[in-house]
Length: 116
Image 1 (cartoon, rainbow, N blue to C red):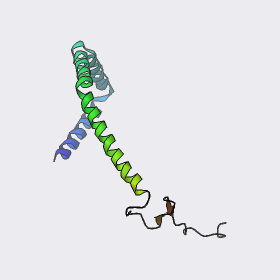
Image 2: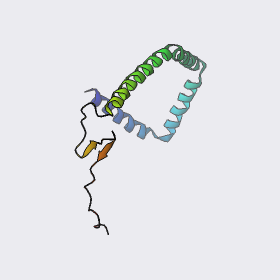
Image 3: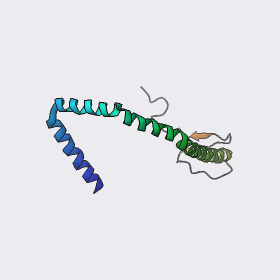
Image 4: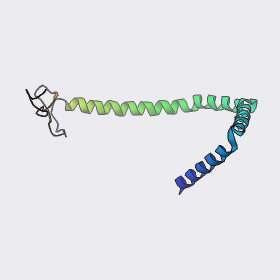
């Protein structure tokens, strides 16, 4: 229901905006620029930016740190699995050779001597 309401509102806004024309668009744009450039708005923008830097930075650092640790653990698991010690779920036609590298069967295509 929420998506339907949003789409209906967006469609109504588009139709009304299209009917208003370019002149009204320019008026709205000018007013919006004046509002954005006003001192009270810019003061609040500056305060929000400072708050984001001081309060959000530790949170972001924690999230990035956790993501890095998770990725490192997954990479360790993959590295441990390279030797073939663990069972792998490889697609058909791909196998791990005695050298530890992945190899694909290459019995596809027209075959030797059949290319133009």
